[in-house]
Image 1 (cartoon, helix red, strand yellow):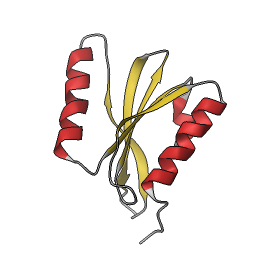
Image 2 (spheres, rainbow, N blue to C red):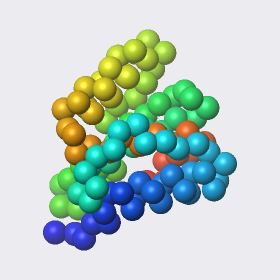
Image 3 (cartoon, one colour):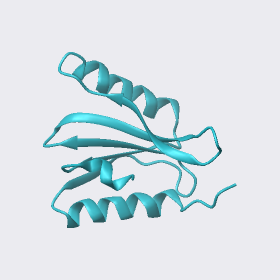
Image 4 (tube, helix red, strand yellow):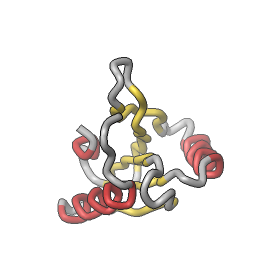
Length: 107
């Protein structure tokens, strides 16, 4: 099993980095302090929302995978999906980063 940074520390680091680089970050749902899963919502100027989460890979280590994306046709469905995910898992952290090229935070 690979060692894991506690969730609250990882979330805090993401928020500080986004703010330091001129972006905006917020916690939409606080999860389990140490072992909660993190769902990362990346937006650019409030639009083009994409959700990433860590998933187990075929070779074992977990990596960030896109699990959902907003389109002009599904904006409402996208946020309803996000609400359902949060309601299903009280340990889940949902963090939004509004910054250009947000994927660099998870590479």
